[in-house]
Image (tube, rainbow, N blue to C red):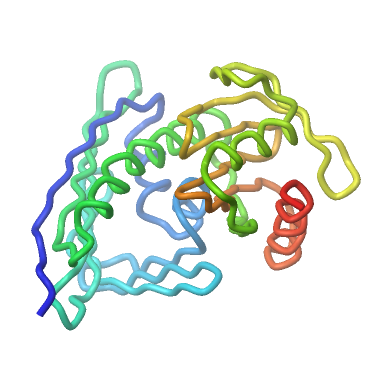
Length: 247
């Protein structure tokens, strides 16, 4: 039997939004679509079902806490080796209409636990950063999640050099840098809102939070587009864009 390891990660973030706004973002399907992974559905009650779908991946879970405006939690079913993941969000109102949010991410990881733990430790704060961007710039709107995959590259240096050229960015990318790219025959302009090479680049435009995620020469998008688009068509178009960038 493969070795397993328990883990628990705690992340805190202050959000310029009310507890009601934060609740809508973290505990409803359309809200989660706008900053986290994939297409989501939440059955709003304890023991309700959660569902997330991405290209080539589907996951379900069970709601374990549902206290509107205060606490939301869910966990995945345990796999044969006992591995599972659990998420708990704790909401606390602050003066001035802001909110303190705590994410506790726990569970049991499998044999490759060190690599997976490192990815979660780095990735969770980035998703919360996207949540903050969503609440600040797109609150009340719902996004279409767009996941597309690019061709495998030799390493992350090749990945970020290609993305940098396509987005007309300088080598030393900084938050606030202006972005310009050509996509599907039109020019898109935006600004870098998160820069963490060699694994993550976030760009905010007038109607999207564009997320480029890389690891070990692999590149994919985790975009959130606040427009009336067809998800499958958008994912195909971004896949073609990535293929062209790295042809």
